[in-house]
Image (cartoon, rainbow, N blue to C red; front, side):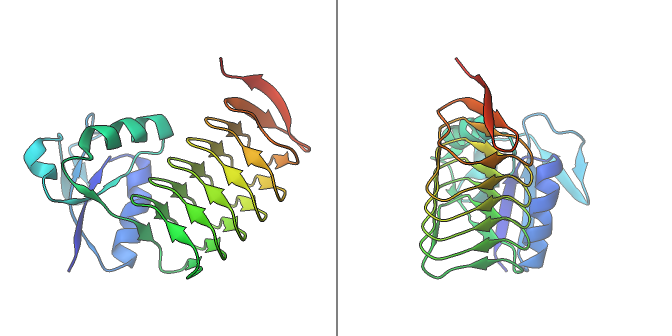
Length: 203
């Protein structure tokens, strides 16, 4: 049976652990820089050390995109990264998922979608044809992306957001829960409402 190591022992790790079990994989152990407790279910949580990562298959189970990116940069020369898809999800044979990306239950990813590295595609998302999702993006539960959408690095799309065809979401953008996006969003912008409006831009 193939085994994995999770880097992260918070709430996001608990969801990923369910996916590991649903795919009949083995969680070997967990690592965390600041573990919320000494144990995760029946498994001990260890502080990260080089020999615990060496030649292991790892998922970085941290929800925050910036923190996830920093951890990946720190450990990428010590391990390989696994890609996980819950068995209840559909991924077109004509689409691609990058290393370290996790696809939660009941997701639909249609044809010619390209998803980058270390993304989180959360429960019940729908991603239509020819979307491009760059590295470290987080799609929250029940997000719907129409066709030909580009979402750039580290963007976070809130619960239940809807994005119309052809739109580009910039790097580090935040799309609020339930927002309907009908036009391009610049880098670092926060957008909320229906239709979505920019309420601030990160400097």
